Image 1: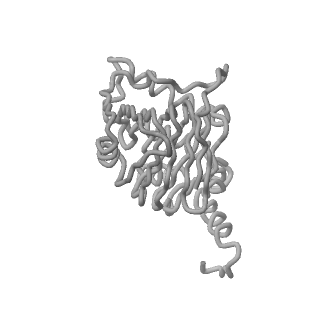
Image 2 (image 1 turned 120 degrees about the horizontal axis):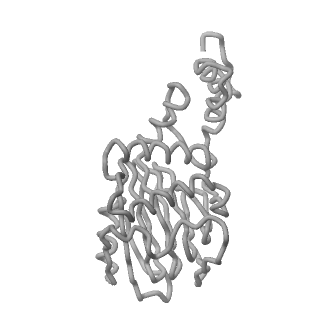
Image 3 (image 1 turned 90 degrees about the vertical axis):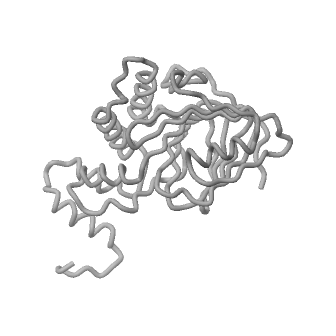
Amino acid sequence: MSVSPTAVNATPNSGIVIGDSHLLPRQAVFRTRDLDQAREHMCSVFAENSLTYLPRQRLLDFRHREAKLGSIALNSLYWGAGVMVTAPVVPDFYLLQFTLAGECEVWQGTHHNVLPARSVAIINPGQGFRKAWMPKARQLMLRIDKRLVEREFRAWTGGGEGGGIEFEMPPVDDVTKVGTLALYVRMICDDLRNEASYLSRPLVADRVASGLVALLLSSMPNNKQRAIEAASQPAAPFFVRRVEQFIEEHARDTIALAD
């Protein structure tokens, strides 16, 4: 396995910008130069993982800030040095990643993707992954509870099973292509800077989190896209849309009227 040795710097752009090193300034920062301490911290925040340096990398400067929004956690992450994070499994959450500066590479299953600055990508639950952080890379990572995504999908489509929602692995190469989602995330980060923010109130946080997931399901390509698009059409009632969805998902099977 080889990874590119240098980071790709973010370029100035008049489009959408999520933020920089000053994201979430009111949240406590965890900072360490010790690799073992960084690994233990990542295990407590995300999931069990192993952590190693990339070749010729030793000068760690790990920094992490976290803000909670109901079933969503926003994480500002910076490693300084190049590191490889290996997680055996992502148990019950999605990881939505905005690369703010530098570059990362992700391997999950048979997929390998490069995440340059200004790209947006997502890691699905249920599998392990490896992620190489290039030196100076910086990301905003949203940990989104799987149950919240399923709840919003069921509410949107009028019932049925929301399980098995998988987003496509290739990243969206420009944050402007998911404009409303990116602007919504930026609005949340901006509001969290304010001492008078109401996002700490459970009812407000839940509504804002629901809106974020609705934008996620609309913006990022996934295997339930047809059901979501059909639910947006008011002409057919939800039970008709469920029949259409069932037929599409079993197009290669023999379907009887009883089915």
